[in-house]
Image (cartoon, rainbow, N blue to C red; front, side):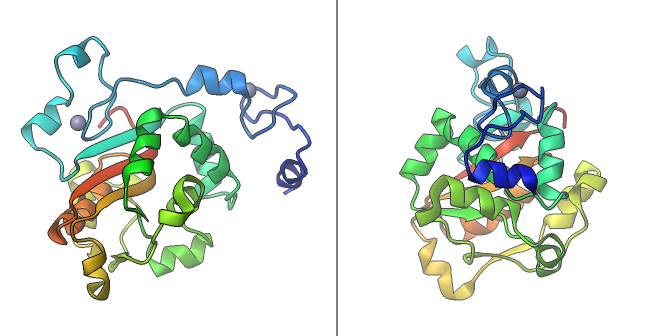
Length: 236
Ligand SMILES: [Zn+2]
Ligand SMILES: [Zn+2]
């Protein structure tokens, strides 16, 4: 609470990663330079690829075999130190102030910036009402507000099923868990047809959640679907 207050009145505070003074955000410039370098990634699931491979390939093996229902997928950082702890305090520590730092890091990625500029609508992955009540805010929606507030529409995509927490499940269980979790508001389907859509979430692990949401957007005839996340796990 005190840290948040300091930020609001623009007094420098310590970097949460290295404790350096002064930091104008939650993470200092040195740590951003060290831990948020852009990486070569698969174009449809954002999995990190060796940069030498990118001269010949744009997709990982898994996406070549089973193309995900996404036209493009971008991540700002890898789900690793120090971001795992930052995301935990964002999601489970009731600290929505992190959305500003995550949003800035995402905006500094040129692919994410271009996706936001070229899209018609930005949709956060919705939480179930139950989880929204528990957390008090939707972490994906908070990031959307930072990225493209005017284009954000949190009411088009609905979470119609409360699902188990994905991080406790194995990959096949994750796919099954979210397979029927989403639907388009039937009265708003015309707002998706023929539109370029960006789906936003904080973390992408197996991709099950984003793929499931993308499938319903595809059925509603979205013209182009991009997924954008703050952090991507590197081992599936
Ligand atoms: Zn630092
Ligand atoms: Zn891939």
